[in-house]
Image 1 (tube, one colour):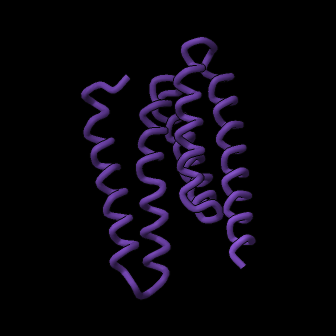
Image 2: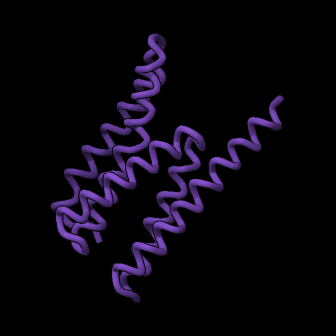
Length: 135
């Protein structure tokens, strides 16, 4: 699971995530800095986790492409679904870890990607429903 080479990148990503959340709370003006802090906070840890999980199966180049795709989707998902997109990512990552033991990595990544996309859609709909109920 987690070996020594993964600890440093995960710790760095967790630190960046915490700093991004603090940046959202501390920075009041301009609003673009708050938005950028939020996007960094919501994509740093999942991007690192994606790279570390897929590097063994896809190699460096494939893992980098998977990471870029995940970060873009998660950034868009957090824009529409707030933190619910984070939960969708972790469910998809757990599913990938379970599936890659029993099936080849191609079908495992396809099923976890479909789960992630479904989770992003559900998180956006949940946020839309919550906002509609407010007023």
